Image (cartoon, rainbow, N blue to C red; front, top):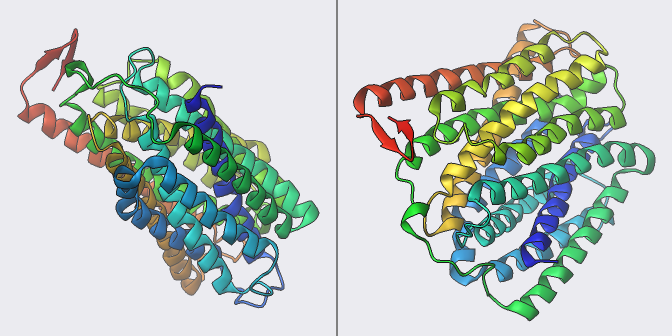
Length: 414
């Protein structure tokens, strides 16, 4: 197997642990009869805390792999995360307390950021013209989306059948295997890159900066929506829709499966590249999905799946715009990828915080019942995406008025 495919597989494995880890944690938090406060919101607060640490890790830890090497940093991240999965899986801190979840998920997110930005840097350190950057990124995005899909799907059913400890222990084993694979690759190849082709003139795209700005705005507000809805759904799905943990994980996995499917074909479709109008229009799928989620009746499983499918397509397209244009630079890929990941992390922080604040205000005013209050997260998500699309449209219009028309490779840019 070629080296780069090993890291695609490792990305899938670690993404499975990422999505499964937060979902497993949220299932524990929302279980009835727990010793902590029953007030709705702890699962969102933990998710937001993890997003904050992920953003900080992306900003301040990502450059470490530029400086000290990709594989040493990736290996260190795996080792530390494996230790904390073991701590939770074998109750080394005693019976679960709410601070355990903050410690566990904060550390995990900090080093997930180091792992993913290191792999992104590893994948984009060279320009291999046999496989365009869009396709290489498509494979990378497909890897983490497939891992997220499996993590959400498996966690719901395994947690329901065998308990949360089984998932934590399973993730510790996954990370141990990943650490072994990275160690073998490090011993065999050292710091050698995947490719040796130098950066050439055709690899540099000055117009990418504007599209990257649009992409980062889109994914920032998209992550507000994504994190608000997915963090609220374990309790909202149980209390309002009457779903089991397995079905909740199943529905969330549909959202991620569509992301994976998008990453399969999207890199082969070139019409979206440097097309600002289409870049904005495709994000409307998120609005359509969220509106369906808002009107879904109690127990409407098929409508919920359709809603998450639409939302997943719009969100994954927005994600790809951001990462693709962020890596259209000739050097410092981990730093550039780290900024992209930081935008994701900050959006994922703001989403749960806004949802918790909205739920508190609505609950205080007694506008909704306790079971229905989770719909506030959907309202927050709709507002975020609509604002994002309007903001991008304004920037696009301003850019079009202020910039002369330029022709490049047979296409027109502004």
